[in-house]
Image (cartoon, rainbow, N blue to C red):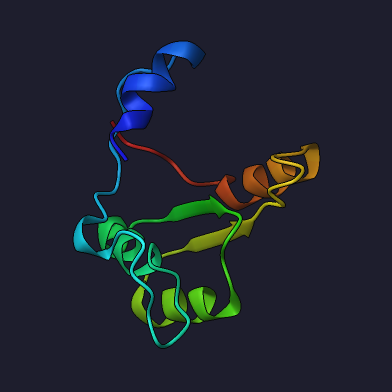
Length: 103
């Protein structure tokens, strides 16, 4: 997943950004239907507010996040055929409204 810092960030003008290392969970299927990314993302957030935009989330991921993450979280599904659209950015802005990031 570090490849995004190498290949995408320079093209769109972003600095190197932190990322979730999925380790051994990368592409591992879970019997409970929770996506392989979910537990690692929740652990990485460590109670901090987060927004996760993806095209593979399910109700099981939402339930897992609610049960294991004490902070605010938004799991936002995006149609992979359409990508991010204006209504997605509106939903993300509404979810992030009022949150303050401390550097």
